[in-house]
Length: 112
Length: 114
Image (cartoon, rainbow over all chains, first blue to last red; front, top):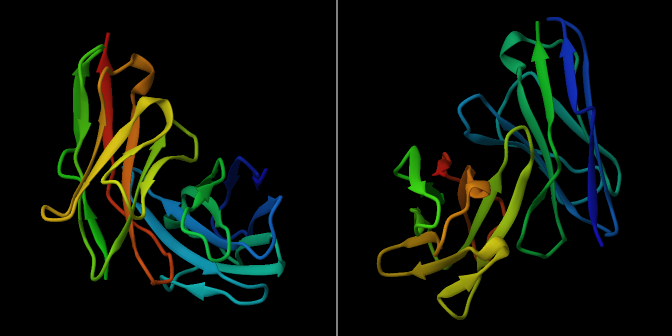
């Protein structure tokens, strides 16, 4: 069966420091991969998605970037964090050609 | 572009009573419709989906949802709510033959009162 791992679970970083959140999917090949952010109060915002290794689509211009160095690995990065980057970040995946997205357990980022 | 409306911020229901969480959608073409549940500080868990076929779909934990094309709705229901059903519920839509990016509603907080 397929599983998704996301880490770290919680992170407290100072303003201006770099960020790296990592996500890997096991048990499938060529998945679609997604990064969402959930701000306080619920709403889910799609940040990036990738349908193939090396290809990244950005939904919202911002202080973050994403990379897909391997087929089942998706990384969310920032060179310099802002206070507004605080939130709950969710990695998700879907079988290529499928129709259902499955989420990881999320990473809490607090920028101080 | 597709969108979802979940009109109620919070739904309160007594334990044992029926639970309904409302969702309406807007999409060009035929929709894929989904419900997810989120417990505190956790990721979203998939509950059920409508892709095609029978308008009544059954999912995890005794939940079901009914697709109504004329009303563009996909309400989530459970005949008898449990205290453990207290959580945040999200409706989502994507477009058939689209790129499978989901548009989420803002979520409904469900509180089941013992």
